[in-house]
Amino acid sequence: MDQLDASRFKMRDYLRFYWSAFYEACSAKQLYRKIRDELTRLNVHEHVDGWHELVSYFVSITKRELQFPTSELPYPSLESCYAEMAQLGYSVHIPLFLKAKKTRPDLLRELAPRVRNFLFRLITVNMLSAGIADQKIRQAIKLLDEERPDSEVLAEFDYELHGNDQSVFENICQREFSEPTIAKYILAKIHLDQMGASHQLGSDTELEHVLPQNPRAWPSFDCGPQTRDSFVYALGNLTLLEKKLNASVKDSPFDQKVSHYKQIGRA
Image 1 (cartoon, rainbow, N blue to C red):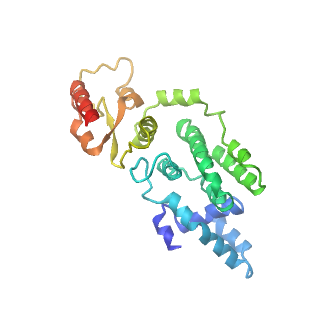
Image 2 (cartoon, rainbow, N blue to C red):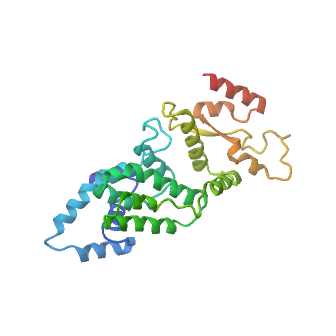
Image 3 (cartoon, one colour):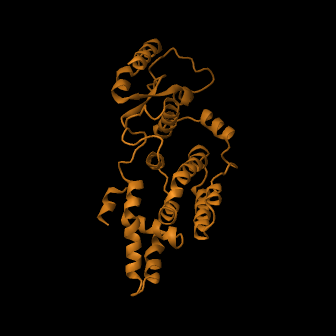
């Protein structure tokens, strides 16, 4: 279990995710009592072997250094999908992925992006409770236990009540991205989907605010009836630049920034 040192989670977290995957969902306080009640002299080795079997996979999807975007992982790929979910801070999916890895590993290539999209729409865009997602995860695990077809498991995440394309688009357009993680994620996805897998973004990619965050920059900029922040943190005011290039443009006037962006584009 020394491998867990590389994970962003502790051993107790791993055991709780494992227990949720193969037994029942439980809180951290309930975990050790449930393990104690389940263990007997005859089955202790079976349990320990099960924990060891999946620990490498668990670490691979929860590594501390797992980032998106990064040039270290091919895009699109199953591995980059794991990185996306780690970057967005999701963990509700982990029991389902452990279950699928054990019982239907080939399903993960379709399941992981489906779950990622579902969580992004539900939690990140619409800011709804992770409890709704947990219900879907639990149902998918139940379907795996019942040996239902892959199509039924995947269909659990074709969930559009709170996440159809139009509502997702509208919420993103209206949102202020004052915290950079989500905006960086969205712009990276757009960039990579448009430019293709051959045009990777490095882990040093940063957000550039065309209208600068510094309230003293561009003093003549007219916000009209809106707040300055509504402009500064709108997705349309943001772009991706490498750290060194981002530092070079800073609070420059708009015409200078545009000239610099064009030079970057020709580089």
